[in-house]
Amino acid sequence: MRLKELKISDFQENQKYDFLFPIGATEQHGPFLPFGTDTYITDYLVTKIADEFPELIILPTLELSRSQEHRGFYGTLYLSEETLTAVLKDVCNSLKDKARNIFITSFHANDPYIKKFINENTFSGINIIHLKISNTKDDEYISEKILQGQLDDHAGNSEISNMLVIKEQLVEIPSSDYPKTKVNNPFETDNLREKSPNGIADNHRKWLTNKDIGKRILDIYVARMIEGLEKYIQNKSS
Image (cartoon, rainbow, N blue to C red; front, top):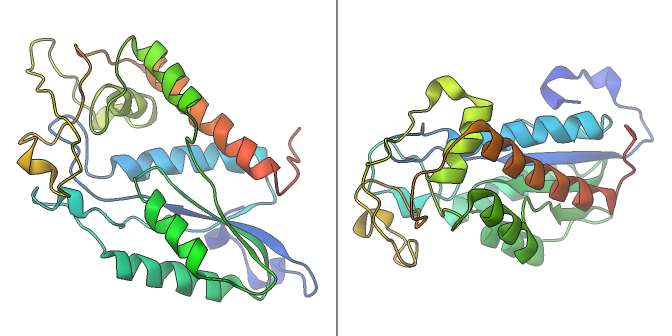
């Protein structure tokens, strides 16, 4: 269920609910993908989760997050860590009276800030859970087998392939001879443009993008999210 589609009469007086707060991003994704890539992917995954857990209440996706690492590229919109933390706190406070579990998830690399928020904030009687999209070396290993090479850090093979599944009309396919530049530790300076002028961080030896790759990797993310949710709530579609 999506919160924006519900009415106040849909909430029962003495019932507690489970909420999912999705966080995307609006940031550069190189010459082949749109600024909303992380939001589109987050929304796709959340839709799959909503099908599996129909009683889970899905909040509107936050389309701005901590994206300072892309600030060198015009069009990137970002929140400071302090602002993102304040938004998380305000949302949790808004829901606390009827919440049992509040899951926070993000395809964008907000994991350290979500983890820090959860560690530093408590809400009486409520579980605040970081619902991870990928959290094991096994996931990376499987993805790299699908890609027949290294998994990209940003705007490369896997994300292009993901978006071919989700929003193909917004994707440009890189030509096989479009140059690839090796980018080591792309985010260590918190300014990707210093290392990658085109905004891509993908050290795979070649371009390998198609819908089959995208769907198989997206399925890994969905399975990981379902696994995380099942620790707290029953999968009522099964």
